[in-house]
Length: 170
Image (cartoon, rainbow, N blue to C red; front, side, top):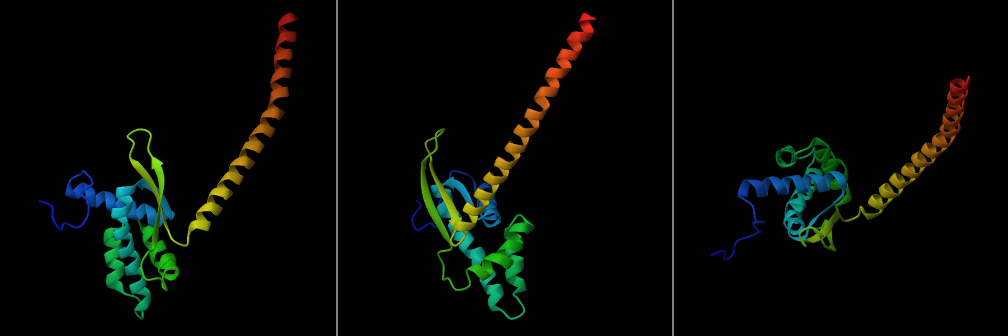
């Protein structure tokens, strides 16, 4: 019987589950928000709170807490997420006591009808929207440049066809 067991099994073996949670937490810290299933989002929220707690503990200790940094590095898969955790998120959440993540339910996935959620770090909502807007602006600029270059290239192709036709007639 499963009475009083903390956490979900997520339908995978222990090693796979631990690796999956590590990867999800690393991606969340690296990108600020990710899309996953609701159950996975709820499970990874626990470890995300622990990682941010380590960053806050590092700030609270004079000269930094080396043990907290080593614990975080042992858990996270990537140095970029590690540096963001201690440089950016520790400062961002230093006055907040828990509740560092927010889960938005997005509906069901088409392939398997699983409930999908967007999990994001609280306080980074505007940052994600700004990144998306900047990305769409750069895409629009690139498309405009591409269309302009295609318009310039189109008459050249027509003139070469005429030149080939004239040389064939002669």
